[in-house]
Length: 246
Image (cartoon, rainbow, N blue to C red):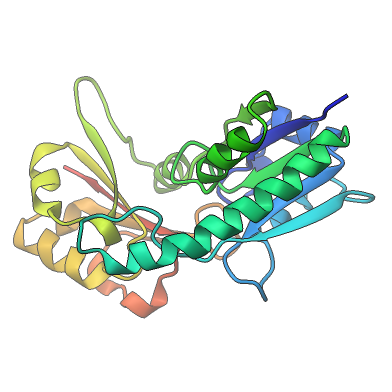
């Protein structure tokens, strides 16, 4: 009998934000697949889960997915096109390892920060898995996203009534000004490398005081900065976002 694959959103960092179903499925899985951004690093997802669930006796598959662009934003996006072959090989390798465990009858849990459907590596892997085994039993378990957690920690509403919201990857975006003019709330993800440009534009549009930055929401070193002009770009990391509430 084949096993099952569970794609589990484990939330943004606070182990108490793991859902009951997430904990149940992790306990039911003999194998955990955990993504890492660096080969020599440790899995942040695994470090969160082990605070809530015993990992004794579980096999850990560490999947190294370099932090590269996975979709070209334009025909001239050379960086993304060069990164894709390496990432493609990594996804295929991980898919093969997962498929083997499932064919052996083991349940596998793929742990992903936040929610599996929002900027998650999982759906790239999902395509590879279905090609290898179309009938694979896959269950996707939602998690608390960094967007929801950040808004809650900053004590702000994301949208009310007929307001419109946009969630944008700031470091890939060409025309941020148009989005800021169109939507009532704009959530800018991955702001750490483009903070200075964002501050400059928000200042020009008179919106800088309507922005709040949340870094590492739910983690021990969480930061909430209400005046983003005070932030130095090098102080932020990958797990930082800005919410602009007009």
